[in-house]
Length: 290
Image 1: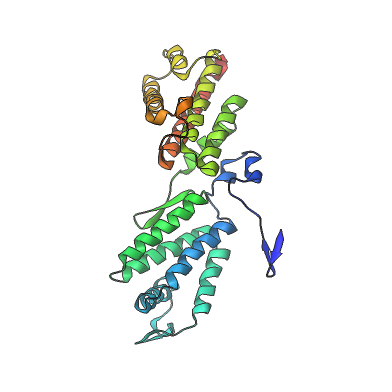
Image 2 (image 1 turned 180 degrees about the vertical axis):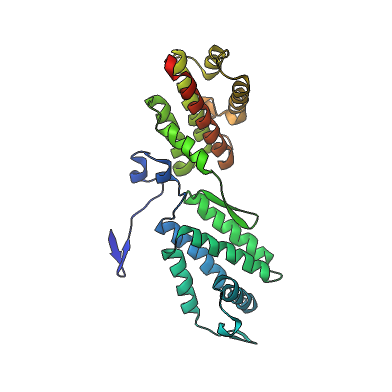
């Protein structure tokens, strides 16, 4: 730790050397039930920018909403007259900063949703809400927070059951499987290379199929044919469609196409979850025959 202005400052570079040392748990890469200090500061910065807006009418209305609806104070406790808010701006910003730096992550999210509702309360300022939501979602994406603002609500993008499935795949005893899958998570969240994340997710399934069929050089398509009689038809059909998508889209499955596509975070996340489910299905149903 380094001290700056009597405050401990941690050195943290997203995707840097420390993160590249290895992936052990999904929760160490993606923030699910907590927020680190870096993320808290970035989220507060967005609120600070909003509340230091030059439009005094907007500020007066948003502060009134904060005092009454978020802080649950009475009207006569608001330092405000017909000309607007005359309280100590540094004081209220200090209180809000304490919320972002000290309170539990769920209360930080409550406050952010409260701010969104407050902008709705201020008529004619919907463009500010759109900008605020976009900025908060950008922080969530950049800092690997497992939430997004959808509509006016903060919603988790990978639920608890899916997280358990992802962790089970990372813990897969067959190193080739877990290695590809850990790489898929790294590419998705640390490197932000969505094409290669999809490739690595698919490769984890391919590796599991090769282990089950004892055909180390079999492609996923070939391995699926060998497992045709054993895999539930609906499961096999679903994954053949996913594999077909990755074979066609953006050249993801072909070396000369890697990095040249335009896959999105949502597509790569979908593949990460789908491939995890399929790897775990294969392990649970066919491990005895390995």
